[in-house]
Length: 92
Length: 159
Image (cartoon, rainbow over all chains, first blue to last red; front, side, top):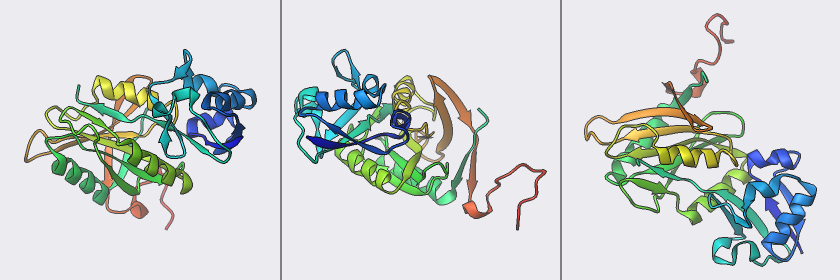
């Protein structure tokens, strides 16, 4: 299963400047492991202690994986994976 | 760090108007520009999904859509702005924490804070937030980037 992963600007240091890269796997976890095998260092930016960092949201197509099993979320051929940093704050 | 935010008057007016409109809730949004330009051009007011006077949070669906548009257009986020409705225009501890996480993924933007606590006189200030350190920077408001100061004083601009 080949999916396209869009890479945020700062993480492109791991992908030789590529904005998006191909990866394969049946679940998000497998996709991330596959990415890591070719773009070392990416996994640590996304995963901590076996789950996704809480300040990053990952979408498979238009679905937030948080509501689809997290790292166990299923992916299918041709899916788009987007890594979206959380943006929030306030006066406190 | 010796940085400065150079920004058009109409974009400043748009941020202030958004902050006033959403008061007493916090308002938030972005200004995008061409990748690597450091030039704010496209005003993108965002929903505050928290609808709170003390907290803001991008609406995730809207943010995903905006983010994909930015990537497709080779734009980046130059300014992230939000309002404080009862305190001064200075980043809170929460703002600093979020900025550090954000910087792991996207280039650090200019953080613009607008205080609307005074109904007559707003306060607008800009900051860099790098590794937990907040540094205020001057804001240079211009009518157009075409005539904005771009070089050192002793080098005449080309005409």
